[in-house]
Image 1 (tube, helix red, strand yellow):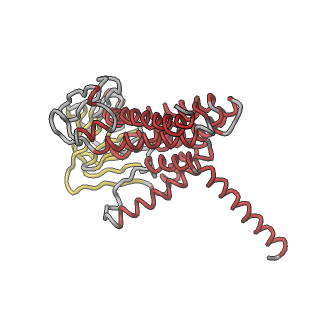
Image 2 (tube, rainbow, N blue to C red):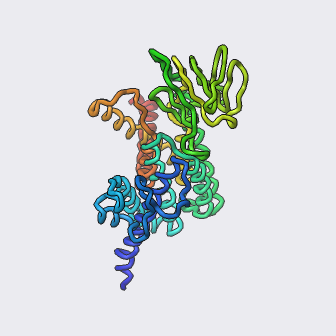
Image 3 (cartoon, rainbow, N blue to C red):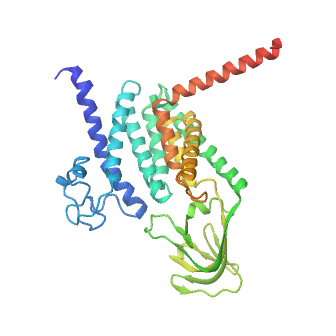
Length: 386
């Protein structure tokens, strides 16, 4: 096999195949992590409907879904097209990263970008389904991004290991701080959300996915994730409560029931969060601290900065805001969705990061040059009266 065939066809085909296999694993991550399930137990994938474990011969990425025509072999339940889509998307992205990065960042850099791509794709589909981005992806990914920056300084166009590592740390810090400030200003601008009901309505605070899953707050038909409500230690969820139950047992109270960031207050008496598995009851109204976006997005941008540097943070936020605005307006005006329906921001951040990965630095340099030219012309006009 000639070198030309190896580099033109064989190695790209290997990159595509690796991507498809990783995409199959990402489907496991996307399904199991938000539901509090281990990605290792059971070791084999299983049908979500009949729970039958899938043998290796019927777990071939891309091929199996097409061969079974999108249905379980045993119970004939439909297998969502998304499983095929994630495998195909990951394969295409891995191939594109190989072609884009093998000459600029080398094999180690390509592997680092593949890891980042897997994290971005996982977060995208989890956020679409559950409006959360798990810490195992954001915080874990941030640590991996910083480590990769030390090992492969070329990720940040550096030649010395410690300089690359510092760029990764700086990127994570800038990503966290910038979006944290956006969330803080959003809190100041948008205030709180008030829910009012015509009659006593059920509420529930529980952790349905297990110990590792997020705590979910249900107010009537509306759901919030705990970290989305309690961003700062002084945040309070105020409710006009009529009935109250802790772990299924009625809790008597005289005046007030308040939910705080690390527990509850019943008539001013503190109840620790760890001792309560489930809180239910009925309410007439609730006032929820409102954020511009979830705290998971803050950690997600820090992860992107750790891999791609602080410039990528600015670009990703700008690109994600434009893409999100376009998609949001399209949904509201063409699909006629209600303005109050929440939109996940993670997928737009992921898309912005992918744009930066492939063409972002060129756009960044063009923009900086345009700013300098504009500033130069303005200064010349000021000095010479133009």
